[in-house]
Length: 439
Image (cartoon, rainbow, N blue to C red):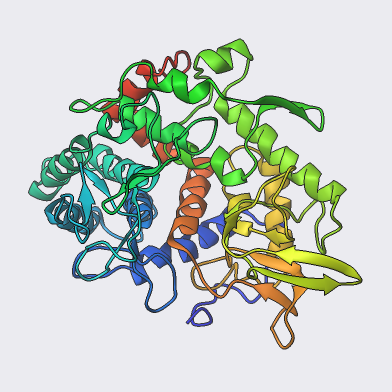
């Protein structure tokens, strides 16, 4: 299937704005091809029997303004798609039963793509629900017209978001838990310290119906780690995606919370530093993995060759399956993710674009259906493969969204501008103590 669409046989120059637009288009086709037309649920990955991912549904919703503004679909029909997704989700059963779709307004991580009910005894996920809510609020802010469909989109999206009981998800503590299972109760981990949970707290604080307590955000930030890495002062988090996902919706340029005011920075500048740290780690390549360098980096949560040990050139290497890789403190097994490099395009285009060009010259699918393959590993040889080394056979719904949305934010700022009109987001930022800039 991935060979069915080719925009160009090979990119033989530094990527232009038009090339980025083509990559954006091929990438967003995932959400059109891998969506169940009966209910709007989006497949987690391109594996034929994969269930729906609640986060991928949220990202698919968030791409609809791009789909309209880039002329892929007319606004009237995009609004109908948003309405169908939201109406189905709102009608899905909520309750403590183990086969429900969610509980207390939150959703299980993975749902049956036909019925919308829980699969795999997976967790009720606060962070994946947050990505769904962010997508819902995106279409609520974008579809601001008077047509019946657009009015209903706003009503459905707000109802879906306002149903979430954020205080319950704290389980009597100051911070949000990772989630809950009907079989065993709350997961014994909490969102503390800098990561993608930043979006989670802003959405929770902005709720009109069941908001987080005022001290929740300070409890989240109190374990932040400010470090000097390769001569750059920054708020540390290893996987690059943690510096990007909240930024898909929020323009952090010039707005600061108390922590960033104290350190004379902002989250946008911090993500720029984090991007350069990743590149510098690859240049230094302390573990001597194949391919790493100035234009080959991008360490994040991703698919991998598998849980296996293998001797490579006389060195015993340990490889991983899907895990959160990071830099410079690991884990690292030689796996690189092109999608996460593109996700840093707004922060550091001067190093991202040459890296995209380097990836484009490898057989990683930039000009083919769904865009770049999400991850590869040149140290892990695969005999008989097209490249000679491991490339993931799948595309993942949660990896497509950052490519589409961050290319658009780099090109036009579309999502950032839309979300400035989103009242819950603005309220959440202010309650978290953000000031300055566009706020």
